[in-house]
Length: 92
Image 1 (cartoon, rainbow, N blue to C red):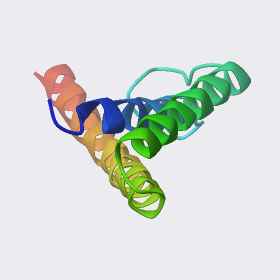
Image 2: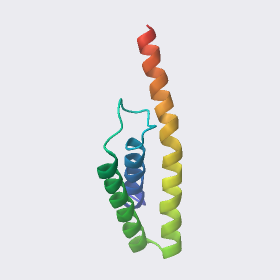
Image 3: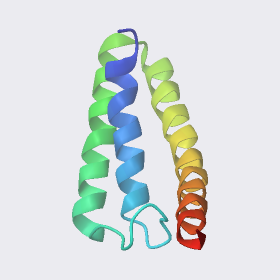
């Protein structure tokens, strides 16, 4: 199981932040801003709490922030791939 309970809420929070942003490319329209941001903040806070219980404080913060950075970097690239695949299907 490892660090999955620590990083899963951080990844979910980052995904919520992305899906609530106006520039997201996964959905036709972004999710409502305020509720999505609140949910994302709750997920990130849970991740910090879980990490603080399992790791030293500095390590916990580093793990959560690194997970958020990696996730927030990956979602737009995944969105671009999804958009390219949609365009290919429509071109056929």
